[in-house]
Image (cartoon, rainbow, N blue to C red; front, side):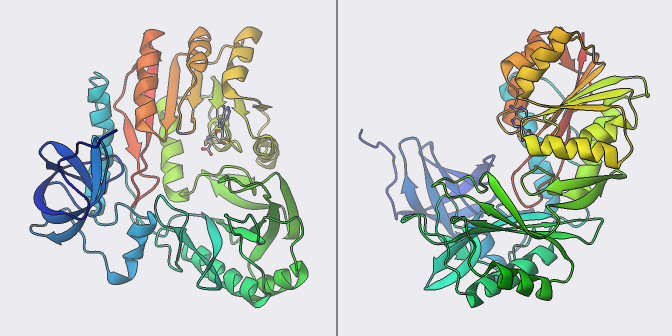
Length: 457
Ligand code: SAH
């Protein structure tokens, strides 16, 4: 089909940034045709060059800022690579502006969905960087050398990087150390085109409240050459390490981890705490990446649930049971469901570890288990849902409503599916009764987490 755009690649223009996308890109218009521009803020006048032309929109790069927004922060030269890598796409916004951006994103999606609801100011964090407790870094060959870094956005080209800016600096340091050890032992990095080479990724998890670290080597091959030497060198260089695992992923896929995990050193898990509960976390289990903000998020969910100690609670998409256990201290019974079986094993162990006897966990798809509980006649007072980005299955909303809980607490990591699900809940008699509360779990990135309370009419 013929492209009808009013611009061509490599042309330069001057224009005003009129809006910002959900990914944090500035929007400029040429004859009503939208171009998305990195590092451009609403209100700025920019000179830009067109880099990509699509049928209904295109992309451009700023050549010069003719005026600057008061929301702008200058990015130091050493951190410019981060934008290319897509690690910190909001890095050019002041933190205050990032928090407002997140609040407005939810607000505008609600308006588009014809929902007249209030969104509170985003709850931010004091130090909005160095917060991530987990990294899964790709390992590739760059200029003849095994390198670690990040894929340039929308590609699989590795940009070598040592300072990841938003990760716990202890993780950054560990990645460089492991990279050098792998180089020294002559290990080959994975090559996606030929599906050859050994090391695909380095995974690191660091506890926040405890001095524990897990290193995972994700390999294409079942064997890890020089495993003994590699382990000895890692332990020598990083004495606080408590777990080294190898995970085998021999499939040609973008999914990072494969089905087999071997413990090479120490324990198969690391420990950390949230709201006073201690957790065992195994390599493949989901665990929130920003511990400081997660405690605020969970506390908010507990507050919205209005627990008094007498309630029966369902925690759908419970992961390793972090919300379940936090709520179990304030409720009569908590029923959790999660699809990843190792996470459910962790959840059960974690309940024991914390001396909690009022929790029950099932491995199942949440949409199936909710229907099952409904059939069994379970009568929850509160249902908490914390689904992945795609939001809730329509059948889950029906089974949830059929169990007639007083309250539904919706923890969302994607405002667009949240809005869709709020509309679906309205059809079965549940409405939002308190302002939606965003909590910034992912500073410097456009990801938006929020808590919404819905109550039965
Ligand atoms: N509440 C937990 C986990 C939230 S992340 C926490 O705060 O740590 C979402 C979880 O949903 C992940 O653990 C993922 O494995 C799980 N999941 C994804 N799809 C699912 C489904 N259809 N049914 C049940 N769990 C699912």
